[in-house]
Each structure stands twice: as structure tokens, then as C-alpha cells.
Length: 273
Image 1 (cartoon, rainbow, N blue to C red):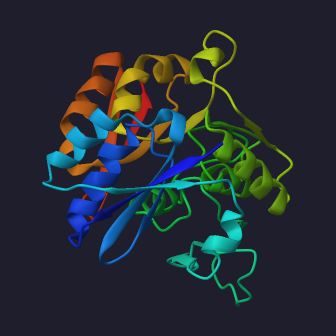
Image 2 (image 1 turned 90 degrees about the horizontal axis):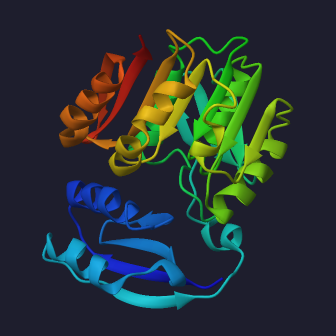
């Protein structure tokens, strides 16, 4: 499958964050940030010229397009991928990083073209908030798993069972690889849609680092998939998304417990009443 690389010249960090949120809703599966540009990667078959032109025009921007044939993304990105250290809690590093690890948890991934290497503020926020949640013996759903980092951490934090789902083939393959790399035996990666779980089973904790559009669309499903009193931790959200997502959660029966912010991005922690 061929991909399109869209190179967007943008120097402002806040604008890059807004673009990532906007383009994620159009099917972009990966981003690469620099001080001068944002590169977005999307399957060629999913690209809609009009929708992208409109999204970029909001910021007065255009993009250069380049077709990318399948290749070894690990080799492409290896020279740029840096370890992420989140306090004394968690280190996220690539398999080729030989370094002393002093945090409680060490996650090793193979960086490919799936979202969630720990560098983005939303993954960083999710990991930080997971430190304060009780995973011991829990059955966990990681909705939109990407690289599988959150699912891997959930198992390391004591989850009895983790189901990590994504409907993107790149993410499915990469998450499976990373789960094996971290010797996770209680985590199952599935290329699945969240609606397929409705009526079949429930979970004692759900992680959902996706985007506002998907969270609003599936809020009712998320509510019914949770056990009473169970937490839902959401991100992929900008600060301006807080009101609409919180209200949608409350309308379904959730109680909003806390909101945390990093670089204009937020997490929202809810519990099922």
C-alpha cells in the first residue's frame, strides 16, 4: 500500500498541534515534526484533496505531496527517534537505545509509522495519568492503541488482561511487535472496531487516546463497555475540546473527575456512575 507524505511549512508549535488534531480526523496515520515543517502520512487511497485543502486553508497553509512506497520505517526514523523519560515513572525508548534506565518502568518499542511514540503531548499525558490509576487485576481496553505503549504499560502496572484495538494495519502490526518485544503475555492486539465488543463483554478500565470526533461518536459505546464505577481516561484532545467532550460524557452518565493539560493538549478522566 502506497502512502502520501504531505509536507506543510509551519514554524509555530501551537499551529502544528492544531494541525495534528485536525488532520488526524481526516485519516492521517502518522506525523513527523520539525522546527520548520509538519509531515503528515496517509494511505493514498484515503486521501481526499478537497477535505485537506479546506483544513489547511483555515491556517492559510498549503502542502507539498509526495508518494511514499512501502519501506522500512524503522531504518528511516532510527536516526531521529529519541528516548522519552517521564519523571521517575516511565522510560519509552527504541530497541536500539543502549542507555541506563532509572525509572520504575521501561518500555521498548520499534518506532514505525504508527501514532504514539511517547513524544506527543497526549501520549505523555496519558502515561502520567496512568501512574495514578489502579490497574492491579483489572481488565483493560486500549481503544486506538497505535504503537501499543499504553497497553504495554497497563500490563506492567498489573492489569490481568489487556485488549488493545486499532483499525489501522500499520498500528496493528507495530503494536503486536512491541507487545512481544516487552514480553507481555496478558495483552492481546486486535484489528477491530470498538462496536464489535458491545454486548459481548465489559471492562474495568478504558484508555482512549484518539481524537474528539471519534470520542464523541463512541461515547455511548464506551459508557456501556465499562463496569459501574470504572474509569475512562481520554486524550487526543485540545484545550478547546474540553467543554464539548466533558458535556458529552456527562450526558451519557459519566462523572468527570479531572482534566490535565500539556502544551495545549488535555486528558479527561471520567468514571461511570
